[in-house]
Image 1: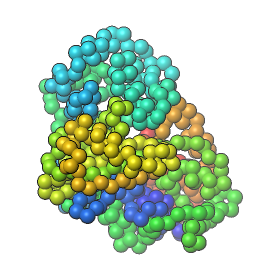
Image 2: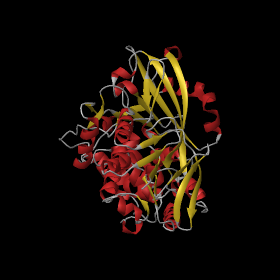
Image 3: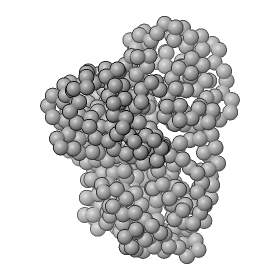
Image 4: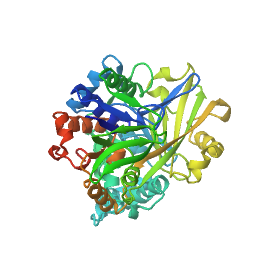
Length: 454
């Protein structure tokens, strides 16, 4: 029995480890030089930083038990510190009562007026959803701006699922409700304070987790192959037989779990692409001298006058990630593969630094001592207004092949976080009783694509 898992991100590694524990031999294939996917980290001369703000946060006992098993003794607990930059001011996110009082009076007055005259939600657009939840003022002043900046499209072009999923991902803590302007304005008045806790590695960056998983897989007899690009998938009618790499190496595959790009899989299987779109991210990683003027683990920047969408600070997760007296910043600029930003990110350094100084997260130009640009492909699935139709086409095509299952954030076209990816793969592994089930795929409860509880 030859089981192939494409993509050594969190979903692929978790599934690979759990199948290996069942005695099912697996081969993981990763195109990058390191495992981890979007949970990779960058290590420079004397400092390190993650791909954006990564940490563990879950109230799911199943996921917590898995983290305890894999990361026993390696994690520490830290308090949440996140912000949003709005109206030239840094506010805590989710909002506190003090922050609400600091909002411009005209914005507060108009937002309160919106409580009475909010339209009902009609249709499936992002615009109809946020208008009905937050009203016209916040829709126009924040959500429309941020979406045009982030996705390069108007709210009318996005599906409401992007709003519902994105707001939940930004809020994180289930005890904090931000699903409407009522929640935003009245939730901050609750006498009970919410103290969100995260888990983060005591020593090193978030990539410690995928590295430990990879080591455990190999100790159990599995293989993890990096720097491998798949050039061809051989199949006989509706059954995959083998996978061929660009270097000519071929491996037999009795069952293929795919957590990579949907369009790549469709092309390799000989199908027309379903046009499920992703945006990518160009990252400017900077080492800065001095203490952070605005310390936070991450902060959202909605205004299109600021080139980056989000900043994260490495020392706010673990002070050991930068030399004493310094801090690292990851400035994320959302783009599309092969657009101007993707191809010329390093040429934007001056405007990035100007924006950092303008927003007061960096004191001055001379305090920046090291800069590195990184490009991360396909970081966010884009829920265009017709994405469910495209997703349905993707499902239908893959169901024509018996021994393939797409899953995970990328393969399942699911905007999730690390905890969701872990739970998804745990549920998938639990559904696989033994290797005989994979040799007779008709017995599997899932066909084509598995997206967990989304």
